[in-house]
Length: 257
Ligand code: 6PG
Image (cartoon, rainbow, N blue to C red):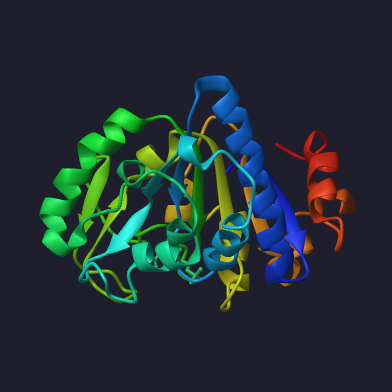
C-alpha cells in the first residue's frame, strides 16, 4: 500500500460521490487560479457515474477544464459500455467544456492505433491536476491488471487480454497516472473488502503502483475497511455522515501519510 495515503470512509456511495465531487471542484478552482486550466483524468466503471452527475450541476469555469481518460474499452464510439459514453451522458454533454478540450480515447480506430494516438496527448498534458480512478475486485485500476506486463517506457498501453470484459482496451500507464497533483480512488460497488485488505497488507497490486508525489485520497465504503489490519489508524480517519467533506478537510492535516 502507498505510504502516503488518506483514507476517507463513508456509509454509502452517495456520500462518497458528494465528497469526491467537492474535492474535484476545489482542485479545479486551485488549478485554474494557478495555471489557468484544470486537467482532469476521468475514471471508467460504474462508481464514478454519480460523481459525474453531481459535477454536471456545479458552478465552475467549465471553459478551463481539459478532460482525459484513464482507460477505455475497445468498442464502437457510441457503444453503451464505453467509458466515454457514460461520462458524456452523465457530465460532458451537460456542461460547456469546449469540444477540443475533451480528449476521448479513440479505441474505435483499433486498440494499437488508439494507444499510439493518445500517447503524445498524454506526454503534452503531464502533469495532470487530478486523476480519478476506480479499483476492481482483483486490484486492477484503470485497465492495469494483475499479471499483465507492459513496456515501462510507454505512457499508454494497449491491453489485449483483460479479465474484465471487453478483452481489448487501452490504459494510461501507472507512471502517467502517478504524474498528477492529486489522485482520488473511488471504492464502492461490488465486493471489494478482500482486495482492500490485500492492498493494505502490502500486496503488489496494480492499484498499489499508482504513486504520485503527494498523498493519494481514497474514498471508500466504511464496510470495506478492516481496522484490525491498521491498528494505527485513529477514529478521525473516517468521514462522518452528513459532514463528509468538512470531516475530510478537518482531518486532512492529521491523517497518516
Ligand atoms: C473500466 C475501469 C476499471 C474500473 C474498475 C471499478 O473501464 O472498467 O476503468 O478500472 O474503474 O473496474 O469499476 P466499478 O466502479 O464499476 O466497480
